[in-house]
Amino acid sequence: MNQLSSVIDLWIQRLRATAQTGLAFEPGAYDRERYDDMLKLAAEMAAATETYDLDASLSHEFFARWRAEVGEGVSGYVTPKVGVGAVVFNDRDEILLIQRLSGQWFYPTGWADVGYSPAQIAAKEVLEETGLSVTPQRLIAVYDIRKRAAEKNWMHFYSLVFYCRLDGGDMKRHPVETLDAGFFAREKLPENLARRELGWVELAWAAHRGELREAYFDRI
Image 1 (cartoon, rainbow, N blue to C red):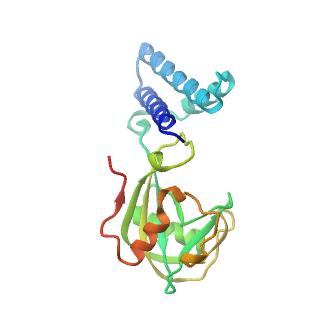
Image 2: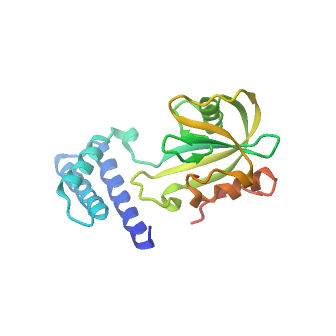
Image 3: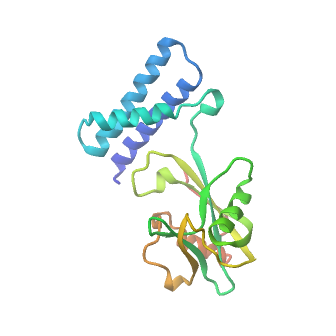
């Protein structure tokens, strides 16, 4: 994705979020119409960047989906979603990876659930996806996926990554969410790794070797 395309995508996301947030706070009839117009415009722009054409059916699809997402009041205020990941090594300096349904390999990760702290989510995801018990030790990265992802993504989210200590358990992959799971040496990583553009491979080993002095985050 080139720089101009990334900027246009950002404009679309901000226009969409502003319209959805405005609609969430019970605006009067006039303002509601204006916010709907803004959301339709964002949908038309999104459809145009997807197809390089004024695809009315796609823009209607985007608008209908985004309009249905509108919440009420503060709960409807549009903010980035949060994902949480866990970097785990065994005593052979091998990293724990799971194979997603897409076929790509990645460290255990998932959406943050209500009622849990980020560290609890990290441990929960590892247990659910691999059957292993871990203890989060420190935060090693906060990724802004909108800035770092190579592919177009209409969802803006942050990813918090924890370095975790392996405590025990028996490897047992999740029967629905993962195709496979295992530990891999640095020189024997699977070829089909997810989100290599984040630089997470290098960061994970730097954290494991004690070379990471502070958590990574995307600079302004």
